[in-house]
Length: 246
Image 1 (cartoon, one colour):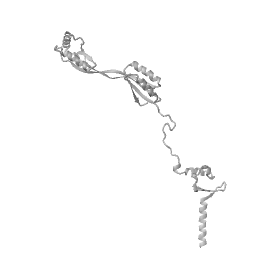
Image 2 (tube, rainbow, N blue to C red):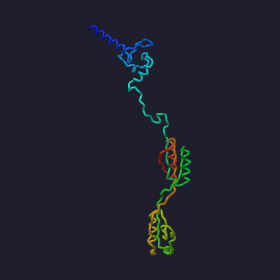
Image 3 (cartoon, helix red, strand yellow):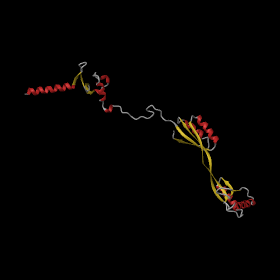
Image 4 (cartoon, one colour):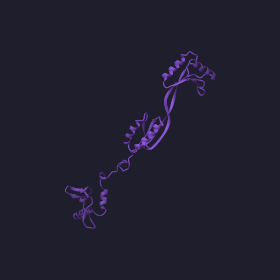
């Protein structure tokens, strides 16, 4: 009975050894499937340099590579346009505004071309200008009454006036438009001092619109912007504002 169990044990050991060692059909050499014995002990085949690996059967090399530890596998990382070899967007787009003369806008346009600006677009728009102050005698009920007031001013040697003939202030008497409120108040005080029985003068503010020119451009390199800023600085009132490139 003991002999039977001893024989069974030897059979199992032989089977396990056969599973561990395989014979190459081509060369009859014995190879271990997962490792080799080195000076430092047992080492995995995947950890050995390719030159030190024993000869393997066809197809085994690919399976070893696919079985490499996950820490050794390459991990794809997101790349920027520059990392991937694509062109980085170095464009700079801006708008110059605040130019009040058409000739000045034309001269600036030529200067922008000289520094390499492209996609040039120009235009104009109405923008708020300075505030003026208008001194008037409020509208009279008829043109005849307005004419009487004008005649009275003329008698007092006031010549800088006219009768408004239409609009919101029809039959009012205009006494002048001034760029500062101080000068307008001085004019109103002068008329009140006549003591001629005229209506009391009033001062109304008038917003004056001006034609403003603008230029939109694009530079391929931001370094060109330094040259352009020096050019714009020579144009009084002009300013540069960065915009999104289209």
